[in-house]
Image (tube, rainbow, N blue to C red; front, side, top):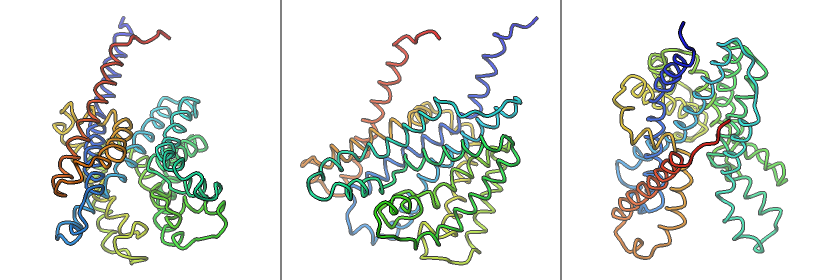
Length: 350
């Protein structure tokens, strides 16, 4: 008789290795994110006149949608595995704590800015202004929490998919409308900041939640490469024929959303199809430590490199290239040390 302990390990390994391409995809997004932030931090104003500037800026704008889509896909797949086993999806304390941590980090990383402003204005307004700047981590935490809540209510794959599709469409359609919503009351602004960018929100749920919701929706297909490819074609077609509802290239423009979705799905098709892309240990490590890379790389760029006189005296191109190299290897060194320490320190038995 086969020992269950002998079969569970290969099965678990098979499930994990099946989605290594997601870690590799996330790893590429992290590396491109470092390039994006270094470019934005040290770029020369004259570069906006380059013919290739807008193409690069567009490519840089694919990083956040990729993160949200991947996170939604992973969350959706985890939910469906529970249902496939005939179990009820539960929102555990550990999941809530993790999402709460991610959500809070988005604000904690900007805490030094708030502390530096204390005493320079009305404290209530300063707090409102601080809370209104919705970081990608806060948007990610809120988006995944919404997906968990939908799953807990539905407890059914079909209803889950219907609601995700409706919410994703709602994000795309309502974004241009919500973009005009304003209010003078600072506490009302805290609510509106999740709907638009009028109060300095970087990643309001409209339309950014749409990427996470679609990621969870696409996790329903067991052949993600095929689903991604078909989805990318549909998204590109819609991006060409949707009527304009705002300025071209505006993040609330539905055609712009569909265009970026098309590229995200096309990149995902490549990673899902080509296993060689996920064979490299570098991308896997970066993808698995993406949250750590996000936190560390921001500190290296904005807390250290921007304050170095020797770097400021260099030509703009040299500053961007050198900052990218220093930021990546500095972040990688921290991630590697964390990984090594985790393998050395013995874990407590359950």
